Each structure stands twice: as structure tokens, then as C-alpha cells.
Image (tube, rainbow, N blue to C red; front, side, top):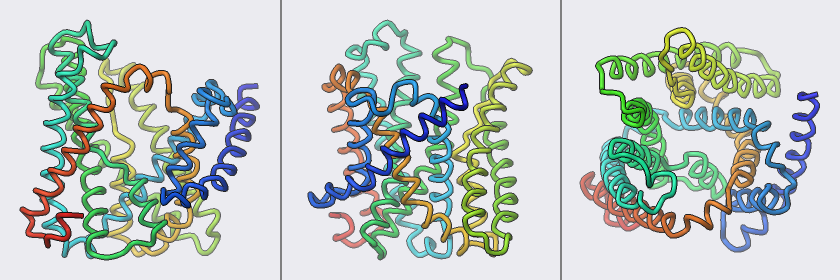
Length: 356
């Protein structure tokens, strides 16, 4: 019965997604990207407004989100082609470092100062407040590679500036996944008021090693998939299935490690998928085949991902926290401008790059 219900939810969501693809074109007339249309249509169709996508459906469709996120991680890794990035590497690394440091510091401090205005944090002790602030600062660093790649593909933008911007977005997200794994583990000890122990450092190292090890396995699996002669639809399906398997396996690892070791291992599936994709892109004969699959699947995955994301937006939370949201939004935007300009200047980029 549960399977039947999931199929019904999936069918209803598919209808909304198809409609989103058609209606999102209206937003282009206002010089807005398609993904804006997907988000808005998802929001309107979600439980907050028209309820075409029910509240119960969102949890049942979590696997769609997992497949989409895994694919987006594959897309991120496919953009990390070292031969193309090498000429812009100084700019990419410098801007990545400045954006990580500036954004993390400014947003973390801002969130810490605003916690008295956030209901769930009012009664928190100092250690937990620091943990929440650091997590918020880490999340604020991330830029959406899916958004960047989708918009660049939509506009067919090419050139050194686009290459640098995309390189920074992708490298920064690769770094932030590692940073998040570290901050997340440290934050758990702060929130649970457990004294810091060396085993926490060991846990982070183990989590990163497992993520990289699984990434190597994903590389081997993707190579086997890409070796198949012809049968492009089958290869596309197997690539998506590989990504979903990573999410399924890492969730199982988290549950079983907690059950048998008393210590929950948080192996980041995004990092695993990025590593696997990076290795396929740079250390295999199948880069072109893999890139073709990513490019052809991308538009469909973005429709599903952004429409579902729009449906998950809680207008109630936005209405209750709009003031805090605007402040954090403003601080984050400011930090990105400051970090982008200063990083570009330190890297010796042309003045035009800095202004853009």
C-alpha cells in the first residue's frame, strides 16, 4: 500500500514538474532564469498554497531529492577538469579562500548576535549558540553549483570569467562539504555538552577517509557503466541509480555505526559523489561520454530538484522570521561582494573582472 501511495505522489509531482517546465518560460520574458520559475511554481503547488503536492508527499519523495543531489554532485565533479582550470587556478584558489574566510566569519558573528530573535535558540547555552552560529556560517559559504551550472547552460555563457566564476563555485562547494563534516562533528559535542575528546578528531578523519574511499568505488562503478556500448538511456539510468545508491549506503552506515559502535558516522554523500565524478573526469577515458550524460540529464533533473525545493519552502517560517532572514541575506551578499572583489584583486585579475 505504501508503494502504491508513493507512485501516486510521484505521478502528481510529475504532472506539476511538466507544468513547471512549460510555465517557467514566462519568467524568461522578465529576464529571470528558468530555475526561478521552477522554485515559484513549486512553492505555489506546494502544501502552503494550492496543495497539489501534499505535505505527506514531500517526505515520500525524499528519494527524488537524493537522486537529484547526487546528480548535482556528479555535475560539480565533471566541471573540475584540471586541464581547463589550470590557467585560472590562481584566481580560483585565491577567491575561494577569501570567500570561505570572509563569509564564514561575517555570517557566523551575525547569526550569533541575532540568536535572541530566533525562537529555537533563545534558551540555548553559550556552547550550543556557538555551534549553531558556526553551522550557519558554514552553510552560508556554499553557493549552489546547480544554479550556476543551470544558468550558464541556459545562457550558453563561455569565456575566462565564466570559467573562473564556475571554478570558484565548484571548488568552494567541494571545500565546504569537507568543512561542514568537520564543523558538524564538533557542533554535536558542543550542543550535547560533551567535553571535546581526541576521538572526535579521529571520527572526522574516518568520515573523510570513508567518503573518499567510497568515491573511489563510485569511480570504478561509473567506469563500468560508461564502458557499456551504446544504450545511452540505460547508462543514464545507471548513473542516477549509482548516485542514489551512495545516499542509501551512507544513510545505512550512519544508522548501523550508531547501533553497533555507539558513534554515528556522518559520511557526506555529496563529497563521495564529487570525488567519484572528479576521478572519472580527470582519470578515465570516458570524460566526454560522462559529460554528455550530465549535460543531457541536467535540464530534467533541475526541473525536479528546484520544483521540489520550491514546494518545501515554508511561508510560515519566512513570515515569522523575515526580519532575521533579510539581515542574514544582506550580510551574506555583502560578504560575497567583499570577498569576491578582494580575492580577485589579490589574484591580479583585470579590473573588469573585479567589478563584475
